[in-house]
Length: 70
Image 1 (cartoon, rainbow, N blue to C red):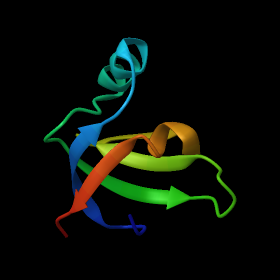
Image 2 (spheres, rainbow, N blue to C red):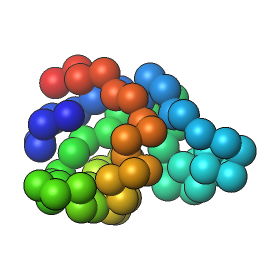
Image 3 (cartoon, one colour):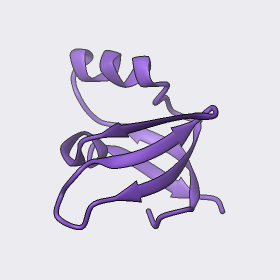
Image 4 (cartoon, rainbow, N blue to C red):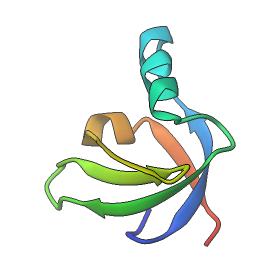
């Protein structure tokens, strides 16, 4: 997803432990997420969900499918 675009989470792939970790960040199917920034070599990705900014790793982000709505 490009920087400063908003999308809707449509799928989160992973096991029970990964899904629980995503849930603590507010990463759930149907939620709107905005990509704030990212690094060009598989670095952390900064996101905004429900007016909360946070960063997740590239590997974690690659397991989250988003449909761009903005």
